[in-house]
Length: 435
Image 1 (cartoon, rainbow, N blue to C red):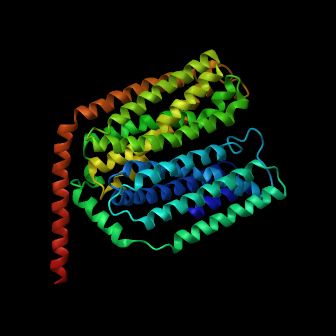
Image 2: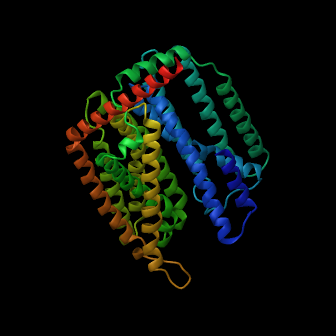
Image 3: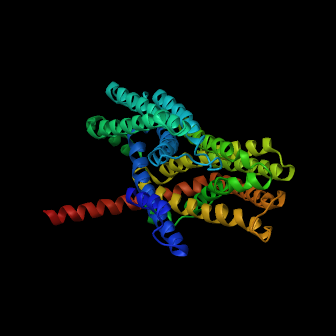
């Protein structure tokens, strides 16, 4: 994954292949990088579910929100090392780090309040999390200041400070000891309470699994439509100077949505309520946000544009921790890594392709002039309306999943029993061969 990202940056600065060959190479490298990230995230989420079973929702929300912290560090490192600053229309590079730092601070504060309630959670681990949180906040603050300062001695000093803090953070994490007894005890406790063990091959044979993927695809597709086309959406209705602020607002609500919906997942779990209802909420918010974008396009109102970005960003962020928690609850924590990776790859992949690329571009291209540019409300009004209707379908699908829950639960219990028997039989065969 690191090698792919290094090659991507190098190819941007010094193109390896020209034309369509270069585009194909970039697509391949980005696909490999995302595949590596998705695989590692699946294993990480599975471990978090096992270690923090009581506050898994908040923990997953923090992890999902922290994925955006690279936005606070990367601009300072990239533009600082190259001794330049981005142009005024370079989306979000100037303001996004500051918004990211605020979101990260909120997630760290919430996490340290919630995680202390875990059984077996020691004071040593709590101090370690606090010190790591402070190091991350100082690092993002230095990176933010470096990206905002003009090129000179001050920005260089802040860049060096960022690199030193990053190095110290990595070394402290690498050298820190792990309290294996606590983690093992917590893991064993969570595994014993996990009564589902369904592999991805078994899950793919059920209608419920694909209904969840469809709902996730629709909910994520609303955010992909805005995230991919936000600059053009703002430009065609006459607000190109608001692109940076719009992207920052969208991204901030995206990360806050991840934290908020993660906490709500924990609350619903304690009350033994269906967490699938959160997909009803995310699709409802996404539909409202798309209608706000539609109204902004027809009335050319910048206030409605910001309101739409805030609502869609919140719904988009809430989709991700909801899927992780629902996936663990429905098909088991022990198989979360493979099941979530498959659902995220298929659902988010189709969301990006269908809604982010196709739906976002067909109306723009159809109404563009001879210079391939489009201006006016007709460029994106129809895609917003189509997306709002699609989100309504997502609401109905989510309600159908909730209604089908008793029948689906019986199917999952049968699959889980079959899976455990197969695993026990395989283990018995191995032990027999060994003796």
